[in-house]
Length: 253
Image (tube, rainbow, N blue to C red; front, side, top):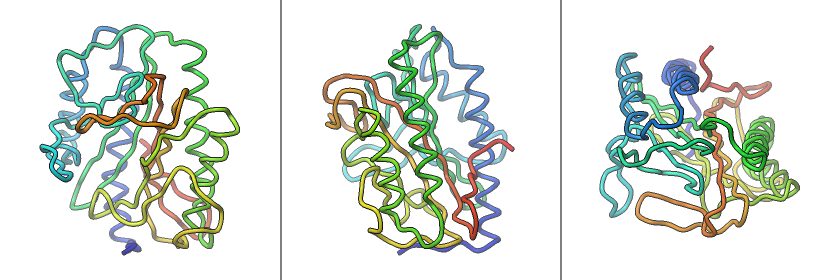
């Protein structure tokens, strides 16, 4: 079931999403060679709790997996999503790292991700980050009333293909609100005019995950990586479908 949020619910989501936007910006100043992903996790959890929220991911359960232990997902280089923070994972000059995080405040969730440069990165990695970010904004632009979920998927997938990259198999965006994951699922590849119709009041987490070498994914517990160990990038925003242009909620403003 797809939930249309009331103005009161949307205002609650704006507050949780604003914490995420501020934290994603703050991490730009923290991420550097030599820092561990566990240190990033602690920084993020302290940031979220100091503003009255809770990390949505910590303790999250899926199927038979143990509860997710981190406040963030920290996915380095060939890791696509769900990287588990660790004191043994130390960032190196030239790495890229995707930070995915959720915040719940007053019963409502936001969800967003950004891929960061660690020092100076290769031209290949720079292009991957730009294509993935551009794919996200193309998907967001398609999130207007009267369109369907497939229009978002097509906008993302066709652009990624045109640029010569690959959408990671079977990893999707989703609705978000009272629950971290709600209907509808939002694939990153699809056909125009297909799927549920979009309406004002929907809140959606749109999140292209783009690989350089292949669409195929290798899974190990929580963690997903590119099957050929090429680089992967991930950008995500929680947005509100309005009667006009979509509103991006996970920004600091």
